[in-house]
Amino acid sequence: MDTAFVFNIVINVALGAALLLAWHRDRSQAFLRMVGLAFVVHAGLPLGFFVKESGGAVAATVGLASLVLLAMLSFVLLGAGAAYLAERPPRRRQFLVAVPALLLLGAVLVPLGDGPAMTVVVLMNLGVGLLACRWLWPRSPAERLSGVLLVLLTANHFQVLAFGPEV
Image 1 (cartoon, rainbow, N blue to C red):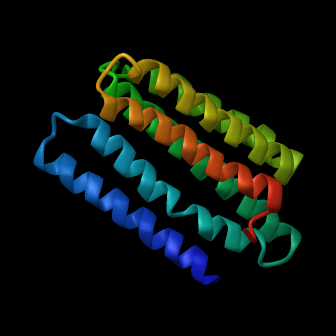
Image 2 (cartoon, helix red, strand yellow; image 1 turned 135 degrees about the horizontal axis):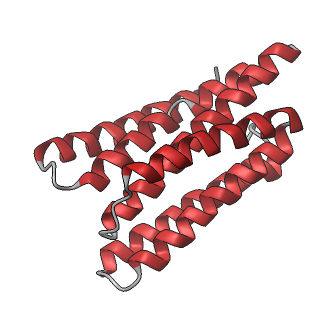
């Protein structure tokens, strides 16, 4: 496994753990829990890339499926975190509809291959970032920055689409 992948895993786990510890100290800050969990889930993406690139058709399919699944789960958690931060907490029913719908979408995307699957996931994350910007813009500068950073996080994913996982 590449050093950059290991570094990515360590950073994501550290950020996720820090946010979860902050939430543990103040449980009223539900957005910390959601974003912290998103970072922990995001730590699995390099492992998905590693499996996908390890060789063989089965590994490629399993790796892509894990990438899509983890990205969609991260997408849901980041969206929920932004909603909590904007004081628009998602209802349980929204999760009960969104999660199966995203699993179905993922099942449709995996057979289409890397390009289409990863493009749709990145565009969905961009949508969450833009929605977070819209929700958070009327709030404090720090909250505005959170929305902008979610968009920039998505911009980081575009480089993988453009240049491949070797970036």
